[in-house]
Image 1 (cartoon, one colour):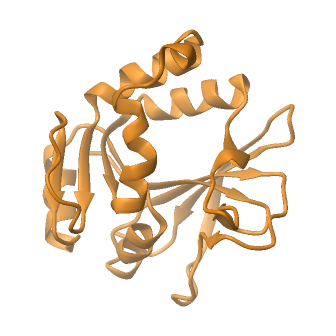
Image 2 (cartoon, rainbow, N blue to C red):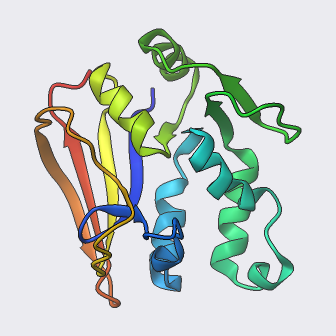
Image 3 (cartoon, rainbow, N blue to C red):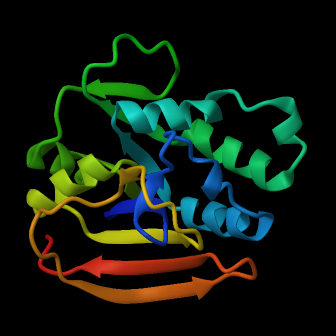
Length: 187
């Protein structure tokens, strides 16, 4: 049985986009991308909201220019085989491996965990906070980008105290930092 893991990339001051709603500040180096690819090897499902879908649908058809890089080709290949669940009203999706849910429930997460051999990645902050509220989030994997943005879309909201236990960490040459936490009192 896999785990539910919130994977997020954020500025040092906790923003997932800059003030113009761009994510360019967290384009990973080859070293960081390779590390993300390794983390992604155990993932079989990704749950996204509309905003997460809009960002990640790029991987359905990456540009030839980007595919010249091995780390991009590896991630694009992994992306093909990950089941994608989009939560919320976003209309029809023509792409393969997409499922639409109107909401996340504890029962749906339990069913996924029972039926999937790998991990379930939560790719959006609001959905991760919903899983925390439902006590269904097992772990958090976070990459901190060494930049202060001052404004943008915040990664966190005030949902009460959530105790964590550090499982692993990595500091990359470019100053980016990977933090891996277990959520205490989750499941």
